[in-house]
Image 1 (tube, rainbow, N blue to C red):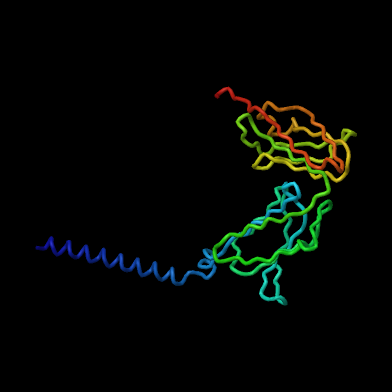
Image 2: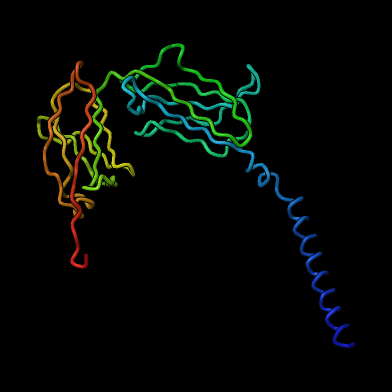
Length: 234
């Protein structure tokens, strides 16, 4: 009989502990900080800027503002897309917003009726905005991959003038891509830099490629394919 009472007592204690734990949990949930509750309600905005040939464009400085009324717009930030033409905005609250081209980059233009975009972001939703522009400068896009077509990140690419001076350098991104915006018409050469750190891991395509930029030829796309070196343990 004593053992039975003892078991009943232990069960009662466990039930009481569980009830207290639930009560504490509900208290912290109800009294969570406002920003913690609001976080689940925020959305995302992706801006993708592309030229007339559908290539990514680092074409302008954009201003993002929240619109409360026609006479009340609160500036949030100014942004410039990367070489991939993309800007991502995270944790954006619900509301009406405006993106505006406030400065065009050299060699890029936007039509007068294509410099402001207004949009509404719903609770917890995502918004993608594709924004076209016109490019009048040369664009060389280089993609570096291995034999399995896997992108190679951090490979340095050099753009060289006819005078044999290096005019620009760029390093490939996670997609294996490097971009060169070329303002002046003329003949250029480009190659992978054999002395960069990443090059040590590969048997390189060591070719020196030629490209001529003029009004009729503004866009070039070239792939480098390298073979990864094998270590003694492989």
